[in-house]
Length: 347
Image (cartoon, rainbow, N blue to C red; front, side, top):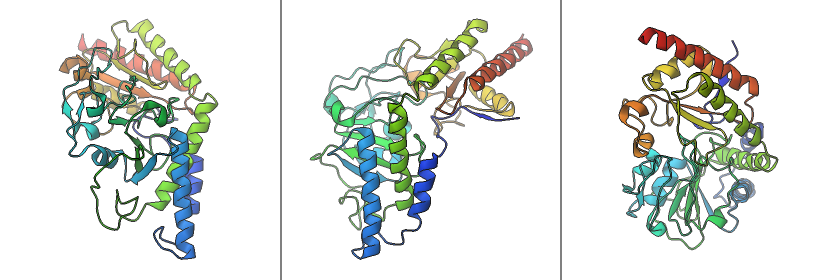
């Protein structure tokens, strides 16, 4: 049985370009902070990756501060700032904000004071894309980076949080992108690396992979690699809706990531669906990877107005450029078969 991976929003497969860059970086013996030839060579590789990430995000002239991932970047951006946000934000952002911004049933957030607010570019569970107001304090661009045509410099945001493994880079590396001149307080102090904002010897191998993945993702986006994926999502949702009319497609009337479909089948728990589909050869999830396994229902769906029972029956399918039409049709056929079996047992 050939397994089908449909959980790109949790983590994307490592790109060949990233793997090659990481292998090459392993041959650099020097510390980027050392002044000798070996150190300068390592520093050059570090700065090359910094430039690749900045160019891919449309952040030329901004500061790219490498971190251990988006979670650390969120802490660096938000700690102690008293920022406001919505319940649809990722847990890494929600840990630092006051959740008082309103969200409608379609997943759209209203922001009155951008300078004191955080707002994600796109939601990892529903795929709903937000309109970022000018002057936003922080935007979590983790899911949209590489999938949507966005430029940090155009948004007017002060800071953006991004991650490598969501666009085909390695796990355990991310970045905070900061508009030059914006003050932030270092959370990890010591040797003064990353312009004094994040101390600790840089993860050169991971960062090299991040840079290569970001460059490749930008090239994919430019050539329209996500357009067929959006069509596959339409095929998937139409196939399910045709036979299971009671299915609720979350955020269907909003702008969404091209690869993401979140749907609710009332009365059929999402975790049960995930396990059944896993046994059938499909990797999907019932929410954010950081939240899977928890008993509580999706915070994002609850913030959108779905009750706990509905939110507990959600399933997320997230595709990638490697996904095929056959993968999608096989998934829809399998899901419908399992649903009919569940319905018969429940009758």
